[in-house]
Image (cartoon, rainbow, N blue to C red; front, side, top):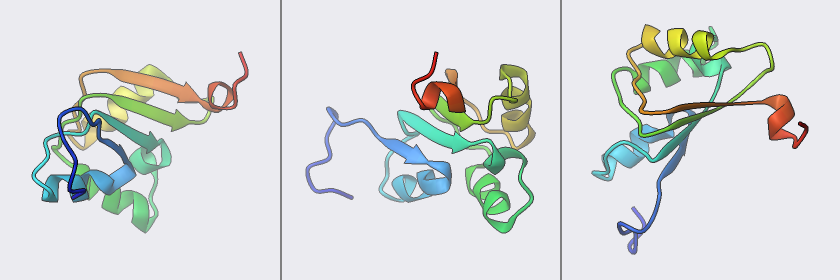
Length: 100
């Protein structure tokens, strides 16, 4: 853990990296960035991300996904492995690239 990590810092994790910050004794991250493939994918990495994050909470989830995913699809996908959140923000590829 960084030596000067204090309450003024915000913790942002990507995919399954929340497992590392929990090892530091930190609670749920402030923001978790997930690719939708981590939720529905069948490759080894996606399966491991779901295993690590199963039943873990998070303060906020900002997704990076394709344009085809919806709020409902994300909510169902996260619920399937008991991953909770306080707020769900979906950022599709058009928003990520600055298009409106």
